[in-house]
Length: 375
Image 1 (cartoon, one colour):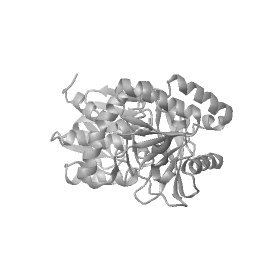
Image 2 (spheres, helix red, strand yellow; image 1 turned 60 degrees about the vertical axis):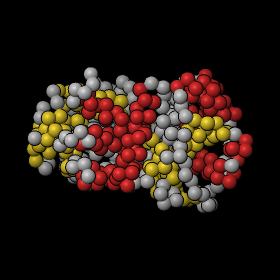
Image 3 (cartoon, helix red, strand yellow; image 1 turned 90 degrees about the vertical axis):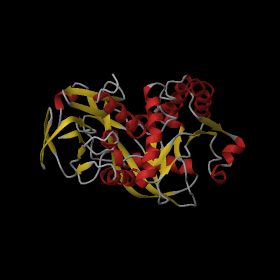
Image 4 (cartoon, helix red, strand yellow; image 1 turned 45 degrees about the horizontal axis):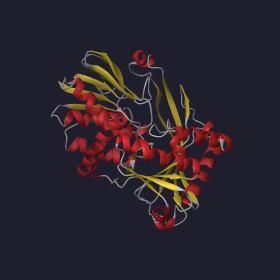
């Protein structure tokens, strides 16, 4: 009999598979599509430490960092480890970054530096000198999700002995047993990592969490100028989104300014992120729309606003080559749920868009708990 049966091959499912397999346990993973297609491959690939709020999320992001490094080294995918740059366009954005560095970063040990003046002007030959400051998050990492995850799958299969069943829908679960389109499987522990699908499996216990779906508009673009970007980029708008900054007193003044000058950015949840790919392109986004379902209809105006922000941030024109919808689970009682459902059955769900940042360590702790290693 298999020790762990895992439903879902996104980052949470793969992280659970690794955590069990590294203990020498027998693991099978089931995924309805032929390759991972959900939140974990539609995102920016940013594994952020600097943006996480103090407490469990910061702890999980820090603990996930060496796991990403281990996977990149052994599975063989590209991982940028030189941090992120959070760019401040306005005095209010700079004030938030300064307050963060002087208070929270000191109190909780965030490894981050505020770059101004000559240090800011030295970045990328002055490319970002039109900004007021940049926060260098020294521990932040970035990968190209749509290539990294299939590479991780191959390594888990070939080197860790994990058995994968792609294009396989799990129809039903009961203690010790999965019913799928590829047959019935038995296992000691069943972990459902179903992303934003709250209706196919365990619908009643998931409904009690009052989950939602967050829908994002995303772009892939080429810069029309020479740029060898080696950092993930964020902007001061992210200070209103990420918990490391959003509750600082200075963030209230920033929110008021954005509401006064650019209310559409708050209305559509736009906070610009830019991630380089290994192919010289840029992943750009995103907007946020919440509801019980993800609408299939994109708003061209939202894309135009993001392109405008990106071109100002980069100081040059870009050419869009691809557009898509990101999606992730939202709502819920907190940033994530580790939900015991029945003996040997549990679910692991993210309720925010930082699964890449915290998922590896979250799965490690969940598996340890299921195996009785921790209380």
